[in-house]
Amino acid sequence: MKKIILSIIITCAVSNLLISQAATTKKDALLLHNNGREREAIQVCEEELKENPRNIESYVVMCWALIGNKQYAEAEQRATEGLAISPYDLRLTESLGEAKYYLGKNNGAMEQFQKYVASASESSARLGSSYYFMGEIFIRQARYQHADIALSSAVKKQPLLDYWWVRLGYAREMAGNYLEALNAYEEALILNSSSIDASRGRERVSAKIK
Image 1 (cartoon, rainbow, N blue to C red):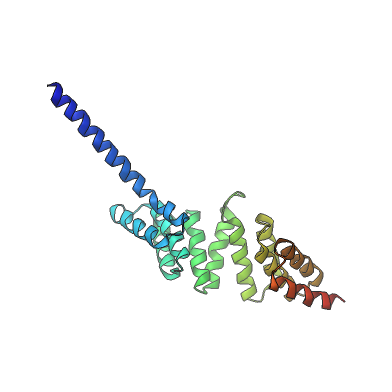
Image 2 (cartoon, rainbow, N blue to C red):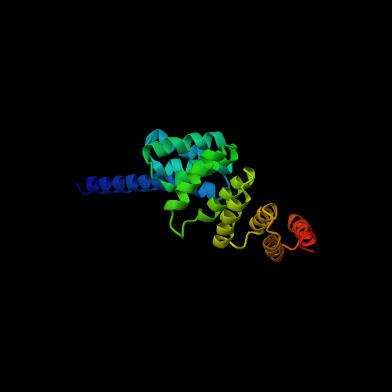
């Protein structure tokens, strides 16, 4: 009798271990994505969605991995599918905006980014990048004053990215705000003294200010 009970206990312990290991494996998609192993992350998410087609976390990580792997059309499709299940998931909203941005769908991308910044908290991880993408869209549309506002918000959230300062300088330069453009280019050069774009931008606007 004791042997039977002991056998049952061992069997249960092994089963629990296997379940725990399986649960850990399901979390690997995010870890793979964070380590830049996008194809593997996508595969794990696909397997998870076969098991549970309404698993929003799998949709989220898959979209991040697809964007990281430059599979923008697939990311757009998956984000749309995920939002059909969870319409207010801001992570999917932002991912859909990015996918549309890289596909050149400016109006659709802007709509998603505006939704994101309107609802995201000030501590949201993608708030700065959403403002940045909005600024780039405004530049594409030659709406330079709007680009200035969006990119100013972007560098306020993440002030250590020299390229964002370069783009802010460019938006201001194109809007004819040369002194403000000079300030942005100089901020970029403080962060990265070897930035060719910032150096050339500073030269251009300095000549116009004189």
